[in-house]
Every structure is written in C-alpha cells, then in structure tokens.
Image (cartoon, rainbow, N blue to C red; front, side, top):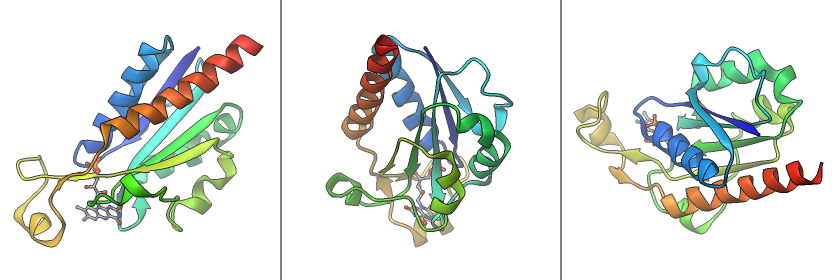
Length: 166
Ligand SMILES: Cc1cc2nc3c(=O)[nH]c(=O)nc-3n(C[C@H](O)[C@H](O)[C@H](O)COP(=O)(O)O)c2cc1C
C-alpha cells in the first residue's frame, strides 16, 4: 500500500505535521510519500491520500484548493483523509473543530473518510513571519504531536485492516 500525504503550507508548520503523519504511517508498515500539494500531478500508484492545509482567514491555501480541483476524479476513487492546521490556541486539544464553512463545500465532493483540525504555530524567527504578524496574532506552537500521531495511527489501522480484508 502506498499513501500520499499532500500538504499546503505558508510558514512550514503544516509541512511538519504532514511529515509526522508520514513517519507514523511508515512505522505502521505503509509506504508513504510526503509532498507539497503543488508538486503532485497524478494520484496514479497511490492507494490512499491524506491532504492538509494551513488555515488563513478560515480558508485553505490556494495550492490545496487547486489540488482538490485538479485531482477530484482520482480523489473520489481512493480513501481520503483531510486535515486543517490553524488555531493559535489550545482549542483543538478539547474539541473536534470541523472544516470551516469556506473549506467544507470545496472538499465535500471528495467524500473524505474524515477530517481533523490541529493547532497551528506562529513563532518569531520563522521565514516570512514578520513583526506585523506577531503583533496581530497569538504567538506560540499549539500543535499536539500526540493527537497528530494518534490520528495517523487510526488511519494506518483502517488501511491495514482493509488491505488484509481484501
Ligand atoms: C494572517 C494569518 C491568518 C490566519 N488565519 C487563521 C484562521 O482563519 N484560522 C485559524 O485557525 N488559524 C489561522 N491562522 C494561524 C495559521 O493557520 C497557523 O499559523 C498555521 O500553523 C499556519 O500553517 P503554515 O505554517 O503551514 O502556513 C492565521 C495565521 C496568519 C499569520
């Protein structure tokens, strides 16, 4: 089984989440490619997809939206899981935060198996993060690696069970 983890990131934190999901799936025995959404031209050779984007003004980044539009027919043929990364607080530790109202209609045609929202990160010293952003947003790293890895383990167990069944 070969799994694609595709991600869209502006300041790198969503890419790190994608890498952690990829590492967890590999530990479970799956073959994984972690790639930026922009670089993926075809889903040929992949048995499942995990797609995630950083949230900006409650929207996914353009390259994630384009990924969905470009590859929709193929996405409808494989199991797909989605994630968003954004909230600069601990809200995602206590509640499941659904797809935003802007993202949900665009991804609905995929018929994804599931979606998670993970906390985000905004820290000084990150390329592209300037004083204006730091002054207007909460600063910190709110990603829960335990939650991220636990979700990836759930995906791995579903895929492994399905591949054994048939
Ligand atoms: C200008 C700006 C707008 C943002 N808007 C949102 C938002 O609407 N919802 C949210 O949950 N997080 C929002 N965030 C937080 C980012 O989603 C968070 O920093 C995330 O980790 C960024 O992912 P990236 O590093 O992969 O680009 C915003 C951050 C910035 C800098």
